[in-house]
Image (cartoon, rainbow, N blue to C red):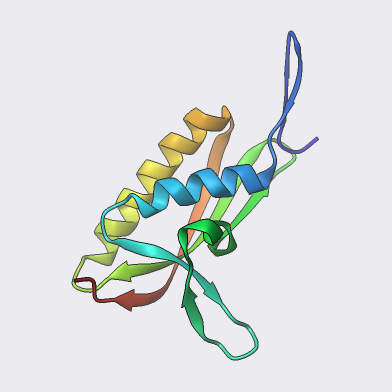
Length: 119
């Protein structure tokens, strides 16, 4: 079963929503990330999400081999190096999610949905 691990005491199953919430909280702590974004397919508008709804900007897929793929839709701060921000985001999220879940992160895709000036 996807997202499940067997131990001597039983089976542990982690819901993808839990992984998304944890990954989102790690991501917004990274330098240069303003927040998660939701893209409206109907009108193509990008909306910055509040802390309570971070998971709407993240998709989690778990393969049959328990490898995690994360898709982030983020808004970055104006004036920062996008490559530096994304490298930092990937390394932090990969390390912390692997430590949290005990499963390996296979791929992290980052979609920059907007740039915002922060005061």
